[in-house]
Structure formats: C-alpha cells, structure tokens
Length: 588
Image (cartoon, rainbow, N blue to C red; front, side, top):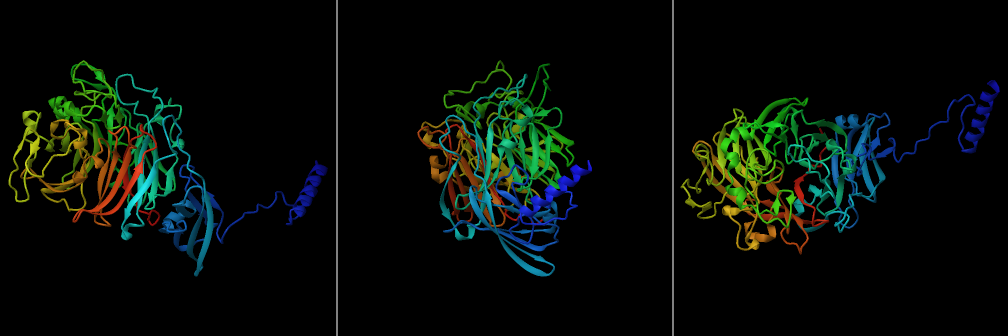
C-alpha cells in the first residue's frame, strides 16, 4: 500500500509539472484552476435552470458595494438594460445577478462596484443559449414574431412580458366528474424590449410533463403579476408559483385539497396572501348530484398556503347561475381559450354533461371568472365574470353591485345593477341592452381592475376594463367586421348606485383591434399611461395571422407612446395577456 501511495504522488507530480504549475509532493488533490473575466469569480449561466437568459457573477467571497449592471444593447440602436443590485440581492444569489441577455448572442455586460473603497468597472462577455420552444404540427415559425410600430423616446427602455399559449397536440387527461383538466396547453412566457428583441425567457420544459400524463405538471401558466420586489407570481392549473426573474423558486405550491383547475388569475395581496380563481372538486349539488365546478370559486390563501376565505359563486348567485341571456348571444367559435372555428351555436340545457361546456348551471362554464381585483377600502373583491358581467362581493358573500346589462337577472339582483349616468349625473336612457350616447357596458370583458389612476376612497371607485365586445347588445352583428374591442374606464358611485363611462380607446379602430377572447388593460403609475394588450386580433379571420396588438397610451389625449404587433406562430395558438416589467428587480 505504501508503494502504491508513493507511486500515485510521483505520478501526480509528473502530471502537475506537465501542465505548467507546481504542487507540493504531499498534495492529496490537484489545485482547482478557475478562469475568471474580472476581479470577481466565475460566471454561472442559467444558474437556476429555468431562465436561460440570466447569469450570476460569483462574488468570490468579496463584500462589494454600490453595484450597478448594464447589459449593453446590440450595435445600431439596441436597448441597454440598466439596474442596481442591493446587498440583499447580492447575498441571496452569492453573486451579482445578470438578466436581460440576448439569446444566441455574445452579450457585453458592464459591471461597476466598490470594493475596499476602490471603484471598479469591469466588462464581461456572456454568451446565452438560443431559445428552445415547443415544436408541434401546424406551427409555421419558431415562436411569435414582433413588429414595432412606434416608440416615443421617453418609452424606449420599456420591457414587456408576453404570456402566450401553445395549443397542445393532444389532451389525454380529464377529470371523472367534469372540471377543466383538459385545459392543458403549454405557454411561452418571455420579455421583449422596445426593439422587439427577447431579453428573458422562462423555460416551459422545466415545468411541464410533455407526455401529458401527470396532472400536477400540466395546465397553462396564467395570471402573471410582478410584485414590488421584482418577483413574478402566476398559476398553473393545479398549483400556484412565485419566482424571481433569475429563475429562483420562492415557492411552488399545490392547490389546497378540494380545489382544482386554477387559471386566469393569481392576484397578490399584502402579507404575501393571494386570491386564486379556482374550481371545486366534488361539489355537492342541492339535488344530490356531485360534479367538479368550472371557474366559479375564489379562495384567499395566506403566506403558508392555508385557505383563509372562500367565495362560492354558485351559492352567492343562486338562481342566477341559470342566467342565459349573454351566454346564448356568445359567438360559439371563441369562448376564451376554447377555440373551435367550426362551432355553430351554444346549447342551453340541463341535460348537458358536466364539464367545460359553455352553458348555465353549476358544473358548467356559466360564470367564467377571468380577473380579480381587491378593494382594500371595504375588504371586498371585484370579479370579471365573462359570461355574466362585473360584480363586487363583500367578505360577507353579499353582492354589492353589478356592472352589466340589466337583462335576465333575478328580481333581487336587478336592484344591484348600476344605473348609467352622464358626466353631470343625469340618467342615460337604455333599452334592450343598448344605451344612448357613448356609454356602453362591457361585454365578455377581462381585467376589471380598480385603476390606481385614482385614489378609490369612500363611495367613488374607478375601474379599468378590457371590453372584448363579443355579444355586444346581447346579439351578434350582421357582419363580423362590425365587432370592436376597447379599453374603457368607469367611475362608480357606490352610494348612488350609478356608473359613468369616463374614457375609452379602441372603438375607433374597429375590427382591426377586435379580440374575441383574453386581453388586458392596466394603469402604469410611473408614466401615467394605460398599457393595453388586444391579444388575439384576427382570430376570426382565417386568412390572416393572429396577432397581439400592444399599445401604451396617454388617456388624457389618447396619444400612443408605444405600439407593437406580435404575430402568432400558429393559427391554433392564443395569447393571454401582456404586462409592463420593471427592470429594477434587484434593488429590494
């Protein structure tokens, strides 16, 4: 054994001398040589395995301060991404977090910091891999394609997250008693700059079961929101998640037992609570039947995942779960992400099976809640029910008001319907779901959110809504080209029970801005603008490419500050939402 040991040491000495560095003969291992680009440590690319356009520059044990990162734009006008890095972020990642890299490109990153009182500026060259997306039949390009149409100079550093779905080739999973487990499409989630270049990407393959056999690893990623510290929260059918933009998992939680099929909305609240739009597993009907429900439950979960509140809309709305006026008037070809260009009509019958069927009654898609807003002033929630209207409900489970056409509601709920008024408070004449002047309700709407453009205190509340416009006036127009979508703002006087329309954009663009499904509008406090995504323009034009139309606009003048089209990679893919992303994600 002694001879073998001495022989090994001798061999190590020969090998070491052959590689041009020395080591003592009694060394047990070879010295580990680390190649570095600057005075810090190595560069780790895609450090958390889900965000390929990120990296960490290891701090190599150094306590550095005043950290600033600039990911330089490509030559000839590319967009720089600048941000500060706090001590907390440095310690969290044990290095300097880098995000905003171009894919398939040797990026230039300028890092400045202070160490031991000395100012340092270093340049790093970091190559990020190409984006790998899902290949499937009937896709005709790698991923969506961007076409920038206008950028106001003051908006050139904007970043936008796009949440796009890739329709699954087949859907083998479904629940036994109804439900929406077959809503199991993949999603592309990425951030673009105002040149239309991808600067961040979430690798869907790390989240999905591509064989589509494991129910917990399926479903669409939806309901993205950016938190104040830069993290993003979202849902994925049977779980809800929170990650930072480096791809570091904060949590990845299954839905509490008894709830299934989360989609559309994961609304963050204070103290890391969240409101989730879910469905109920094995719901017990009053007639003794049992089924899963469809998009008609809201739960509040605390920061440990415990359920602290439930809103059962079947119980709250009572007989109104059979309100069919709007449902009968819908375009059967496009019901949110259920797209079937051959569909002819929507059937209303108690004999229909339970499941993701657009019809009336518990266990079917009678409500289709697609957004949640929280009113802190009276501890209430505001819901967009695509197939009914916009409603406000208290924690006592009582409906406070309804923003929708009065047609079809039960007598007790008709009293909750807001009365349209003009700017002087005069009642507007409305008949058969149509009103005089410019006022209109929203139809099959999305993102009915309290708008931070106003304080929303006391009895006066303001909503911004994306009014998709399907079944406008409780009917289908003679020509589909007469349809339009719009972003709209409402002022609600809760004491008087009135609603005033205060702003709109999109109606003037007509069918060229029409999105039968999905879409969003959201106030941007930093620029005093509304950001709008009309997410599926041309969906009803089989000869044209489906596209998202992204617009950021000053509502005082309707002057467009930014506009970009995002063309789909398939006639089968349907985009959901887009949102503005704050690049200062590591200054917490």
